[in-house]
Image 1 (cartoon, protein in one colour):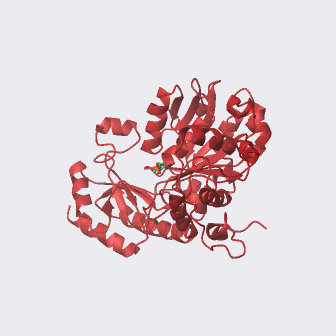
Image 2 (image 1 turned 45 degrees about the vertical axis):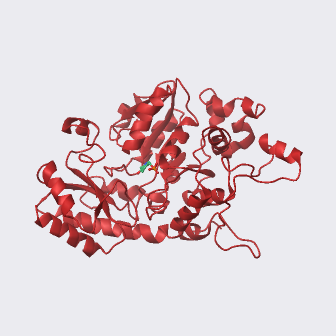
Image 3 (image 1 turned 180 degrees about the vertical axis):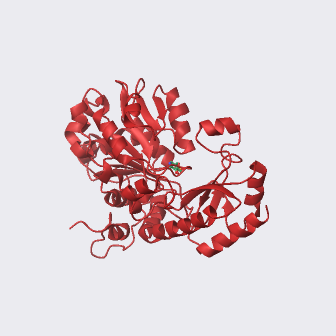
Length: 425
Ligand SMILES: *Cc1c(COP(=O)(O)O)cnc(C)c1O
């Protein structure tokens, strides 16, 4: 019987045999030894499965990838060195120069830059769309060379909720996979495959690690997208790969084709693997993810309610708030809670916002989000500081937006800190 998510957090991916270590061993080895040359040759032809070099696969990393795969309800998964690498490989695995894809414009700034600037230099074009447009409007952005549709479950930093049903049906009606970055919700609160997503990516740096200790990412494939039914669009999966004696991934590996190709080609050629040591830390975080997420959400809801009712606060965005315009959609896809991140604006100008932030004592100003320590960031003064107010608005970031990530401290202490900082402006 399929176990519940809490059990998967603790146990999936690794089961020790008689006398073996209880905790996942860190296999700190670049390479693996074989008794004869023939077996080694078969590994290189992808005819045998086994480890030969940690740039492609490593047992510690595979066990942790398998755990996340099971938590998401997927078919296969691979860890990457960062969330950025996960997003890049997820797209690059099915797109090449001359191809096009569509992404929501309301996504993490790093991903926006990767898609809009760096991938453009590789000849891959991304159209950014307003994810709240009606389906008929969004359909107009598809072209014959469009290869996938991308969005975030809960957008960073705006915490907007993605309408999975709309996006999944759009993608599938155009014969392309729907890729979701599920970082902010985690599989504890949302499992996008249940709502039609084909591929899920995460920055494991955030809640999955959860302690601001290690950078990492993961790509999980549901195995549901039928590449062979769209053969002309995905030559990388559906025509022979000469670097492996003409193997056709979609034929040979079926539902595992996409991840096998990502490992055998992208990891081989580009690297960006997660180290076994980091995978070990990530696994420690995963073991308590189901205990931590409800607490992050509980704290965020309390903070959101406090801020909503405060006279010096101009606005609050938190989809967990009953008064939030996206609350109903959040309940549909995330009935048990959304995330620990929220946004708000304080009345006044950039200077007031800076003064307020400098007054905080418990919440720290950091680039990070989504770990055990409460932290905050003001994009207009930090990550997006080179932009004018007009440019910020065009990028979908309000000039007064403060991104606030609720940690695992006591909610009353977090609120008391906000209270004293607001009293001083
Ligand atoms: C942080 C983040 C990323 C990038 O992940 P890194 O691990 O920092 O490379 C991608 N997507 C989202 C939603 C993020 O929050």
